[in-house]
Image 1 (tube, rainbow, N blue to C red):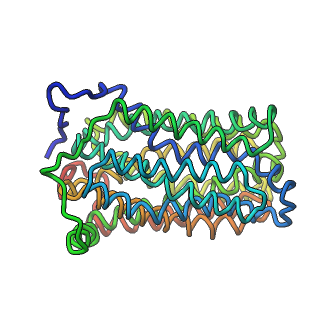
Image 2: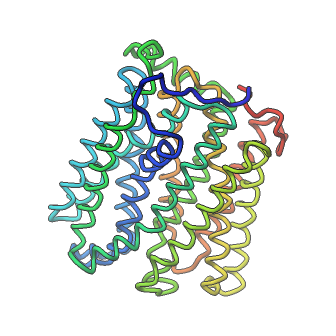
Length: 417
């Protein structure tokens, strides 16, 4: 089935396509901002709380992602019962409470609790961004919209570390959470005023364990949905590992770029944004599967190239070469994951919120766990991350091969259940 959109009802206040994409991208980007904006403050937090082991700072990412992963299952299911709008507002209340707590945290433990609460609330924005797009679009059109959303969303990692560094020039690190609080309030106001409810009462499901279990069971039992979701989780693990070690790799660890760290991080995110734009332009003609399979295989090869470069230069290849390889890998990630998400969601239209929550829950916790394993293995060289990309990418290839019964690069199945 070829994709199509479901327009808002006549007379209903609703954003146009460009505003819709921007608003959904901001919902998706809340988590990116909440992670990337904090990266320049890691060394300040380490000194403030006298954290002995630098790898322990990765817990600031892990705590957030655990809360983020767990609550997606709740918010997605709840949104199928009471609607998208009320659910998002509830999540933003929790998120802003976490921001406020982080601003006054007087211990590393309390800061980790605040990060957990932030993640719990931000889960609503992430899972509902996918569900809202699925409410309005299907098939390749959904993949196209998701790619545009990701293209805009990826602007946030470009600017977030620089904004975080700017805050540190004017105030202490606590105020970075003030910027997160402000963004959460902006999203709540914009969404509340401009986005109509996309799930009408007639399409909602009753609040019952049986109905929730049926929705989860549908996502688990559909071979293509489950295996593509698993492949997404594997690739997300590499992204989580990269984010966890980025500050140690570029700022004060391997390459010691210092204040230039946000520029290196932004350059890689910019490459991902360009790749998302190309994906949005090509997905209608090339197809979700061809593009994503190409991206997945290329991503795995880029991981192998990182490993080869690491061995060739005793674990520390030239920074330009390494950023190029890493940027290409992330670009291929940006081509792959939005299409995987669309392929996984395609058979789930009747239970989009529940399915989206399951996909978010599973991929986030799975990816976060893999990211912890790879990130904690950081040893002052680029080799652990390179091996992570290569091995996780290869495992994703295996999952997709099983899902597609041994066939890759075919566009004929786009839109199939």
